[in-house]
Image (tube, each protein chain N blue to C red):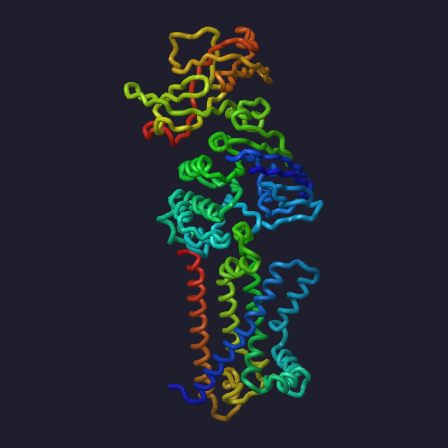
Length: 228
Length: 367
């Protein structure tokens, strides 16, 4: 049904998006807690800064990644030399770009769900002898779970469609960095590639539909956890 | 057990200056109108609220001393807290809610766990989630959860306020049992005279952020100044009684108290059971001679101990009936007509005795 190339692009898209979203999640959680719980001067500014990847043109994000993590740049060179970890022109770099661009979706969902948690429940846990980390792990986090899940799924769906940042940072290498949107772009560049582009577009639509359905199911499951 | 608390704090224009000392076990009611500082006060005891200035000592343990910078956090105070809205963890089953504090306070004895589950009738609820519980069941689970954390002091913040009368009756008997059986002292926040007179041993009265009175519940309720807070209709005496006889022939139950006996319509409690009844000041008539042909069943010989003329047409007459204090509200006109004065012997005709609805037989409940 699918050609080998299509298959490859599909799997790569899933791999890049999932890796990116999961890698960004701990940071979203950390900054979500900071923004939801702490009142400090410059909080609005900090939140604005953390939301930048969403509002900047993706090409700008890709360019900034390139001049930070490129193999000849200080940080990228250090990673390559000391950890053997190469981001530029690899699928890991694509995952970084996708995770970074969609980070604000996760951050916002986590912050909102943390802010929506009844502080009274956390106080109740405290009177029952729970220390701060215990309270976070056993009360706050499970209650924020629906928000965390829905944020992650939104981010995942958006990551599947990421184009600008990926192509700028890690280029368009079939089998390495060529995700579905990049494959569609390549197909359109070739004479007679319209059919191939249409097939890939159909695939994207199916993937998006599956993602949204999954998101709703997961959300419903998470909410049901609080009820039955 | 002794609890000594004094603290000062200011929320905008609202200033709190609270100071009290409780030596006795049993239930201490924190009584007062809304916004008088009751919840803030038990939050201070729990460690959920840190007053700007003050000192709290529980059982010789200093848990707050702002001068010396002592503040023991809530999790180390061993204080059980039953919140007004129960605050059960919605993502956990009843069983996991009950185990939350139990585990963290290092209790391992399964027999104690089973005991409390049985005392509160929670067996059938253990597998459920809080969202599937009724209000009364939630209150009982919250009470169980707090008890299982092995507290040295139990705080209850209007645990019945959100419930209707029937649901309240689901919890009140458990609280009474707890008061009579457990050794844990309790602070009970309420603005209900009924709950206070039924449950409390002593009362700390809060008004506008200050403790205005403190004393034993039986004394306070027949106290004139106190009636300003509770409303005049509730004004009267609370009397501890013991069920002495159920009469088959006329369906009456005899209740004995320090000063005599009261005949009331049948009460569903076993012989020997100890309970409390209220006699409102408005429900007592006074007579200089013992009336013979009268429909009231309860005519008690008493001695006048004081007279207080009130605003308007009324006067309150304080009575001693054996060791029990009663108060009667009569008109000033009657007072002068009968020339009632202190030390005078008198007869108190009790028109009605207020008994909690749940203790009456079902047929009586509708009337």
